[in-house]
Length: 336
Image 1 (spheres, helix red, strand yellow):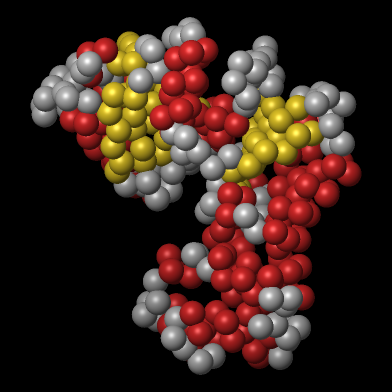
Image 2: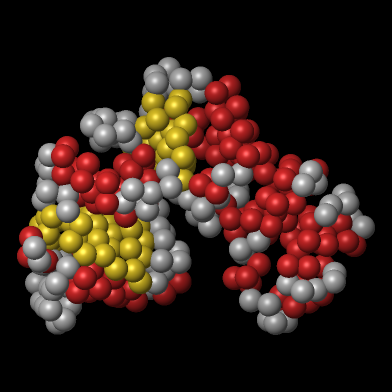
């Protein structure tokens, strides 16, 4: 079975990676590939879509397609393109990227969604109607809710500009802030003041700050400190623990507002949790999310999803093509 048999081209793109999969009408995954991160605000739309094209071409090759054929400008690779993308947070961005994907000619129809909807779809039970809320907490944080009639509730998710707090990069920045103030005397004592510089082989926060400021330590490396923050919190450090608690409260605030705005507070409804921070199994974070969510939305049913988000994009595509439930089960089984 080759690329010509594909019903859905599923694309999931985040800040650090893009996954593409070609899926047959019966749910068989024909081919898969991965490329780099999708960052249109930083690189521009054309370059960002070019990164998607690398993954699409790789999936075509994996499915047995010839180089230079479909996926490389040679015609459609599937009936429908289902693209769930980070950094597509506003309706105008969906329209812009949707038009750019349509120009590529990868499918006869194209649907573009924020990647939060991929998480939500992947986390819904088999056969369930599209009703629920998803919170992604990975490098950043976002939330979306959906009703069967197509109504949604979303947040701009543009960082501090739109009132967001946390995510892996945000937690890392907060940890550095508290550690710096602990060392220079302006803030509360915390083990973060020694743990963070030690992570870089340094002795003090002053050395770490100087290294980042002068470019010796890439900012990107400092944005990956969230696991260290959680380790310090697990060891009992009060400052680190307070940051973990605040992250849990932010996750719950997003979910509870989305549930309220969609009229779902009094219904048993899934709240799907995903992203690298929420999927890592941090006991303090997990326990507080569940406790606080129960207090604000007693009937909500939290569920952590660790399946690849491209599964959600594929299921959305199979929904669009009216594939039978057996086909969706086959795709689910492929991704474990």
